[in-house]
Length: 617
Ligand code: 3PY
Ligand code: ZN
Image (cartoon, rainbow, N blue to C red):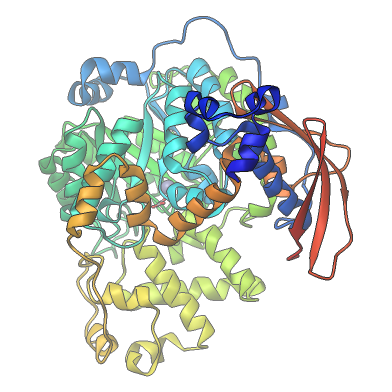
């Protein structure tokens, strides 16, 4: 490949290669030439063209055509300018003191995590970011990172999550970028040593995160503390999170009561967080409960309260308005085309319903509306990842499945041939939750409950029989780990004797509490991002490294081509780097040969190329 790279180099063609030429161009020894980089990306496109992993393109529309013109003039000041000027403590005080309802735009993270399997690529986010920065400078933040985005970028998109963050930082330099951090589990599904959480937070703040929303899947503040402490050493704001479950207004509620949340909030305040977040991941917080909880938190503590919800049952705008009356300082919304059902309530409605009141957001409704056609086109482009909740469902009040997981489980049910019997999975999820002790259900505790539910379905097990004699059944690893205490202790205590019976005779290897000396050194070294990728997600990090080695930086490809490949007569343009444009078009795909391959003939910047691709379709 090195020789091929040289052959493509203009200096070689023009004057012949000498050792002096190489000496003058040391980058040739490390970087590949643009011709070689183009060929490798076209090789990826040829593969997708033959194998069509997601079928044919659902639309020919390029979302970029739907973007309004970018306003000119100086970039308006935004929340990040204020945070950098005031520091996090004074910024939080100001947030608490202001009348205007502050708003976080979740379109860049939670919305597509909850509707499109987290698949929206950096390029599509990056195109919208400068518009948000220029036309909605009154936003509190853009939630753009963390949650499942890290894993999915490495595993499915061939993208570096760190490069996404850095690029978004550059595209919206005036507005706070926010991330979701799962406490000791960082952006993964099991706990990591504290040194990992610390290094992760430090690097994320350095790269671009200004607001860290930190939660623990069982609401255990001790397990959020390393991350909180790490944030307190940066410029960024720490949001300490109460994950909400149940219905605190119900007279039958004994566990997740107002007192329970107030005690939790007190611990978070003592841990030094700047903001209190109510994270209603399943959309269970009803309007009267919101009024009570927000009112009590505001009365008891001086910190601003930030409310997050999912609109699964369809009633969460009412919850927001009740919270607004009770003084909530900030809420989360997503642009309408990526809002509703398992995603957040629409930003557009939040702005419209508060306009001309004392709590108006200060966001320009027309500016929010101007981005609707763009996000609508993006959603159409990602149609294969639509996760199938066609309408609101009130059953969430019973099964309490978080928004992101509900859409995911529906897909898993379809894969198991149970697509038409999803109510059964919901019923077993509810039963599994009761068996495990009525948990706060959010990544990764929600995964434990979901794994058990699917396991009961697959084993055709009756939940009562399973609960009475779990030793007779296989158990998913996540369930064994949970019962062994891997995620901490559940708020309602352990379900005994179920737990003892379930663990008897089973072994469990706990996650490591410490790093090896070598890993510790690597975290302190210059390649901290690669080290974090490897420590957090060994297999996806390897998949990413292989993809990068084979194809280069896939994030430069337009999404239509990345997902659906090339079509005859349609030229695809992409930039290897600013100013280095590649134009490619499909000429023909050959017959299947004896080796199971096809020839793909295409033009690359006017030159004909023939690539051999294995047909795995
Ligand atoms: C995540 O942890 O990714 C979540 O969105 C939880 O709600
Ligand atoms: Zn959420």
